[in-house]
Length: 250
Image (cartoon, rainbow, N blue to C red; front, top):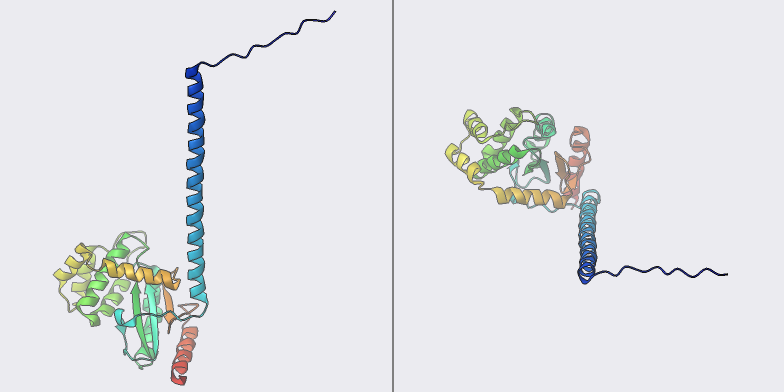
């Protein structure tokens, strides 16, 4: 004798409950759509960043000379010197201070003073907040009196404070200019720092560094080509001499 089949009844949802379920499903779809959109945007930005970094690295290592507008940069040496050396530096960078006190004097003595090369400087500001303050002060000095720029450059590096501390303040920089008896207007220097008068020019230098593929300071370019080691004076001397010969051969 067979047993009768048992039927299972499915509870019916009320309209309110159905609406609540539908709303929850719609919210879930919206969340998935938002997360997917964010992920897509992140992927696009990462891809663009990697492409830009790859292009910058390619420019830095390809041997293709960077076309600098030398007339816009602080210079020591003759304008018509056959070899043009560009230093990218941060006035708060300890390695830049080492370059300024050990390598630069050798370059100036052996090549700049002999008329074979001219040395140029591009301000970068990334070590700390007061890197920018120092750069703005240096640009003010340069625009007030081109010849005094390198005195200020040497003085800042000679008096450079600890990298982890904020020492390149407005007061420090103005006092340093006064101590060095720079032939500039000290009140104008203070005003230029406060008003960020040369912020656009500083940003232009940072953009130039990015386009040239500069990722560390100091970085050195000889006739538009980055040198492998800015502290290897023997290699730098060879590259300067080779660059001078190449110019003469043209």
